[in-house]
Image 1 (cartoon, rainbow, N blue to C red):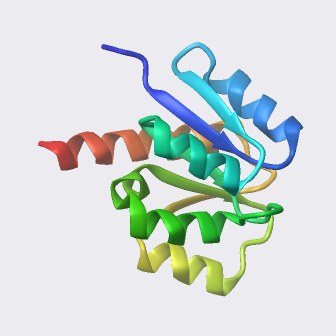
Image 2 (cartoon, rainbow, N blue to C red; image 1 turned 180 degrees about the vertical axis):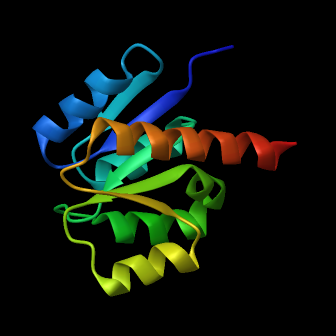
Length: 127
């Protein structure tokens, strides 16, 4: 099986490096430092998983999600938010849109579990 392609979107370089290190052995990793950079990358490449921070300069994770909903909605099936600011409104948004999220600081277990769940759901939906 081909290695999946992951996009890690976070304005914190340390977080991007942690996620890259966690998945380096099992996936091709691309990183973006904000939503604008991610939008450009998603427009030009196909990703199997997108792990995205919420609070970022230029284009937030929620703004990126809403932008993708209009221009590339198939990507949203592959989206996982990662945030240190889990509010009731955010939880409701994720529930309404059937979108996974990980709380910061994330554990390796929570990261791997969310990605595994996402990949399994994506495979099931494609059958």
